Image (cartoon, rainbow, N blue to C red; front, side, top):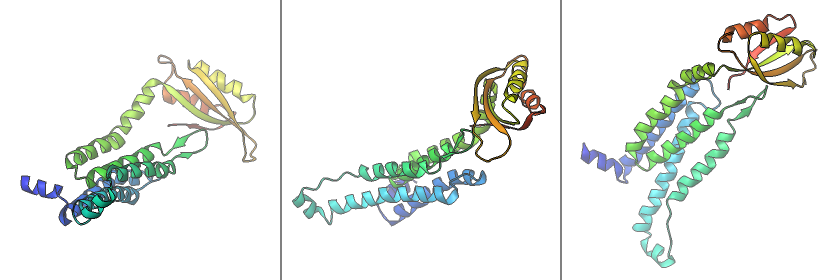
Length: 243
């Protein structure tokens, strides 16, 4: 087993194939969860990013092998200096532009795609580690990344609920209705941090505003707060903003 492990760390055909497959698998495992949730970047995107990152490291290693063997005379004659880390650095710089494309500023001051963006970065780093034959790091890292992205999500939502902070967007008929909504929120014992009136560009006959508040621990529950506002005659619709 130890001989096989050492063999896969050498630079040969089967080692290269194993590294590429490992990179594809690591990206695919992360991308599978994002694909199920229909996020911006899906299964194939994560797989291709990991494979591409692994390829850059393999090219770097191939160039180093050539400079130490077939191209050794030319390298010594031209006093060439080789830095294999520049390939990996180029991948990490380039992935920033790709990850930025998954971040979307949607309506009501919400930003989505941050987890997809950092997931792409993690997939690229896993690909680099796979290409570098750093197997001791790749397998534990896959487990940790999937744990953070998939398993911890329900706990994150629960933690946010325990903080009792709520941000909602409310559509209502006219500007005077803000006072009615505000009084309803305060009767539930909540503290309003901010009210941001949104401009209506759709041409519809209504207004909307974003209410940021903190609920009272003793007086009101999450569902009671939302239902008390939604039941107001002046409220057309209510939507909770979850980051």
